[in-house]
Image 1 (tube, one colour):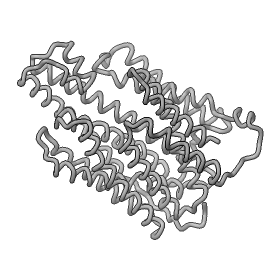
Image 2 (cartoon, helix red, strand yellow):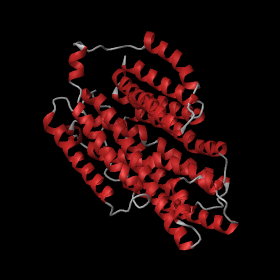
Image 3 (cartoon, one colour):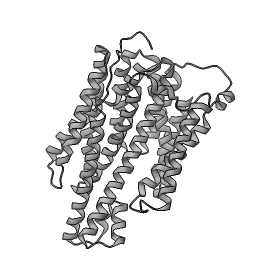
Image 4 (cartoon, helix red, strand yellow):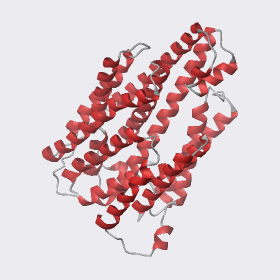
Length: 412
């Protein structure tokens, strides 16, 4: 039932996006589709973990998850395609998916939901991310709004942890999950990979369009240089784990390749050739594919069998939050670097700087001289270099403390 509800929400949101006429409508409807898509992502992984053995879990999750990413990468703008595809998908789920019903009254189950944890979690996340995203651009770092919102967000985060620890019988985030061997490291890695993964894809597109001046269509095609290799290596990693019974080799190799690929982005400049660009993206994509699914299998191997659903949801949540922080930190870095670079150039007014920092696509709409445009592009490139440094640091930190637990153990 939950899977069908999430499928309906995603179809409804994407259908609405196809008819959206304003940015606010698009954002609101995408949030509805995002709720459905996020639920589907977690539920599919939970179902796979429930009907497969620990050793074979990576094989199936690698095949399904990367096939999904490849499809969305090619059709992200074709909103009407998703609702059409949900019809046969819903029929397959309804008639062919094996279900395990949990007995009990539906109302009693709803009462057990951790509503307090949900409110505290959303509140703390928003109150930290919103001021951080505009710090140094819209609000000074020392402004009352930035300080007050950040402090309240930190306090709510502490209250959320205490509430989950002591005040609720069925918590949204079970703190004992962090006490399992290697799991705290795996969750930290998940946060860092979220920082690097989502932010990298977003700012690579900006680099392609704002610096290299490629069209959105070409920019989307170049992103496939990351998606296709990651799909292939994800499938191969699942096969390897199923045969060898170890996830560590995949994660170590993946983080090394990912760090190497992120490090090679340092050589990106305003004139980077297409072949060099694609080779670096292939290296990075190969590392991503060897990392994302094996780390989830590692969490299953180090956790309890009854915690599989919670582990899956927590992992996806942490990775998404990491991605949100990555986008915010990268955006602040780019905006502040651009603002300070243009002020030093001496030709840009405060209004022009505000317009350029609010959107990296504003440059094409402005009437700037060739020299001024070159200075703006140089400032953009400097800001992106700082962002690439940040991504490389995330990849490097993710390499440490990787433990190994056999996937051939009789449990789960």
